[in-house]
Amino acid sequence: MTDKKDTLEILRENLAPLLEKQAVMLMAQYDKNGDGVVEFEEVLQCVPGFEAMPAVQKDVVKESLRSEFDKWDINKDGKVEKHEFAKFIENTTMELIKGQILEAEKQLKLQIVANFAKFDKNGDGFLDKAEFDEMLQSELENCDSEDTKAAAVDIMNWEEMDANKDSKISFDEYWDRSYAVYQQQIVKQMKNELQE
Image (spheres, helix red, strand yellow):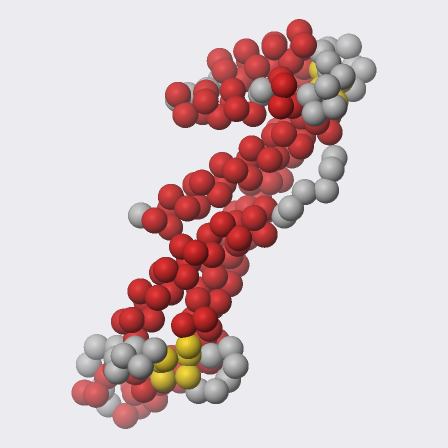
């Protein structure tokens, strides 16, 4: 298997512009005076009924919000600028999806190993064209929608998968192609979710 970029790194690169856009929209909600930075007092102004709260309740709310605000304030100057807020949103989003990605990749690896072993009929560690075609047919039969069929055809492209053009597919070639397509699909899925 060749060295590949980490899926989280690819996601971070591809999602950064969308996350920054979200950060700008959220920042506008907190930046009550419109000066381009958010101060702690502006965050408190966003809490419905804060001024009418009893002192003890205000203290609890302030303590909770101060903890969150301090996470946003990367340079600890008491103000949150756009780049700090954007970085916080990016880091938080990536942390939230990290577990999902790791589990999905674990399942992908198991599926790839099982598929390859199942269709490597002669056990030589390679798929010849006939074995490969049988694998593709099996994949297409198991697809439950046109989208998954299109994804299977994209992954199972003989010319793309046979990277060294030796007319057989090694496990590494199968893995590399499957993983690359998986990464493309996950980036597309996450972009769609963030744009909704």
